[in-house]
Length: 605
Ligand code: OXD
Ligand code: MN
Image 1 (cartoon, rainbow, N blue to C red):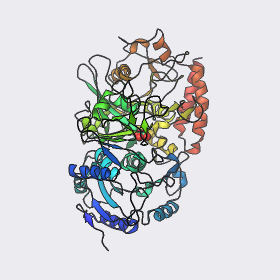
Image 2 (cartoon, protein in one colour; image 1 turned 120 degrees about the vertical axis):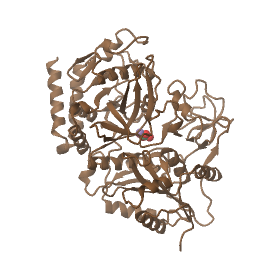
Image 3 (tube, rainbow, N blue to C red; image 1 turned 90 degrees about the horizontal axis):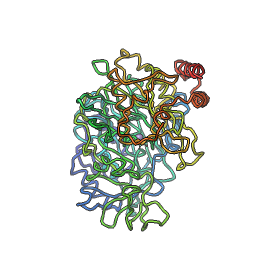
Image 4 (cartoon, protein in one colour; image 1 turned 60 degrees about the vertical axis):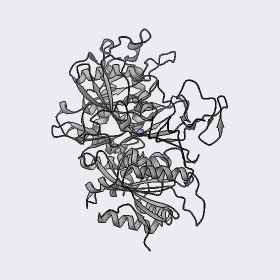
């Protein structure tokens, strides 16, 4: 029996066959082919409100926006339920969970049988990146969640225009998602259907497929983001000679109007969205946003690397975002946004921790309980999110959707380190820069379980997102450096905004003052910038960083730029252990870089 279908089904034979087979297996009540229109978006919001998933926010305070609360058991990406199912386990490497494709397909096949009963199956053709851009990629997500459809509308480019570009090609990523909550005849739906104890986020990189079950939240369910644009795309990038990275992209303009584009990879909770939208404290300098989370980079005809932001929106962490920390993010989310797991104010707006200096007198919290200051609980979940269109960002760069991308002059790697790592350090060469990316690390904070101050290596901020063996990923980065002449490669910088004084206070104010570091990097890209070679890399002289008007303690700059030889030697021991995980897949060039670093440190003692 054919399933009632709305929208305009694709004529693409591979897609049509896959959709039909999926419908036969998942048994939805209806199929809807998404066209990406504003009317379709509004219809998704209406359905969510009708189902009790969403509450419309006050039209004057937050026009076109909704407030959503998830199931308390479905609030974040689930790394322990995330699998890379490459044909061989060796290809997944030591940093990924692995199951054989056959075994995983059998598990998923059973879970998917009849999983969409009582629901609509949505078919979402989407483009990661401007539609038709030579750097962009196409995917199709099948889902049974209206929340996913609405979020995909904001986070990607959705609809018929994508099918037009795809034509009859079978070159698209196939993503199947179900919340895993079929409905029996007449069974009332829950506001956030999911299967909290039975989640699987699985990737089949060899066949460019994603299968996700049981979660409706964020990166588990919006398959274009982490699953496609990082895990699957990193494998495509390796095979095709490009880069798919967990990086922001910003445009930096000096007072004379000269521009350099910079990317930056930082682990979670290191301020990537803040950096992408910062308001410089250095007079006359301008930062504009191209992207805040992911960069795809391919070679341009001039031998330089060109980057696009594959996303069309921001899926930002709400708590901590304020008019002080990131006014541009707050202004972006002033309308047409989806707020998930924040708190609700009595007058129909949203609130989260640190949004305002003064806490509201009363709220409805993210698990539907009344909340008041001092009640001992947080009003919003720490991973509460806003989904908001990038085009609404007050500092979005006019060229953010340029299909040819923007040429990258510099790449930043950073982490949260209380000691050892200086404010900024320039790599001697591309190979040395790859070494710095491979040893990126961040200290765990009191907020996370485990020992405080423990070092966690997160190479290139890709630990949860690299779709293949991390040792092969390092080798891919090294090979990329050989594909053009050295002066055309982006310069690489290791930055640390979080160094502390012996008394424990932050030495660097961060936020808008990070523009001072960006200014030095800009000058280096122009062949200027006062610098000194050290054992660990090229550092600014204290006078190299513009500190005019900076509110820094005496001696702070010297401490921020001090090479802590003993600290680095101890760090080398930790790098030994980190590298041992990759065994024979660790490229020889990186072993040599580590040996070279040790030698230079010993010599400088
Ligand atoms: C994200 C993440 O949501 O990195 O961007 O987890
Ligand atoms: Mn991210």
